[in-house]
Length: 215
Image (cartoon, rainbow, N blue to C red):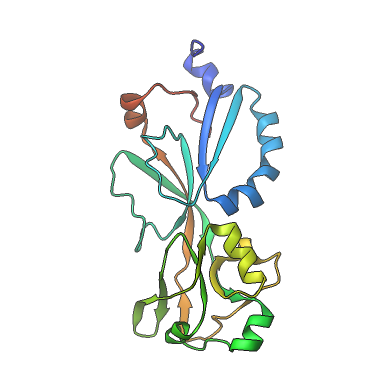
């Protein structure tokens, strides 16, 4: 590791290696488009992109920054570990979707309970899908024969294999149409988060590879 520059200079000219974790689909569909401008703006920074749909311990794996999708402040994936900090980046709208051919052959679910009669394509064994109804939030256990990461599910849904629960930014370019148009039940709106180890946790567990407060 090269010696760190004075703190004022580090804020103006960040340097070092930045290890960034993100979901596979988000990383492959959108992040590469942003990297050229980022690398031009920060010539002293190198970036290692880690794309996975599994849960990772950020501190143990040496992750500086993680982009995560979920309702962290409502139901799932809460930051119970005080060594982590998070900031909301954007809302993440999700829809039930399938190809027009699938709906033509199997019909369109009109209520969350109808999903039990449908083939669902499941992300990383997440078989409990949450919905908001007139009586509150409910979890629906879905079933399906294909379980994989976000990109495979997107392509499988477009190919007519079954119904998927996907973010709109993932399925918009594909041939898929939304199913949860009923006013009586909708999917829980999740959020896009930036999270990572707190400064204290990062310093106590490992050397910092970059020095700046601008990211």
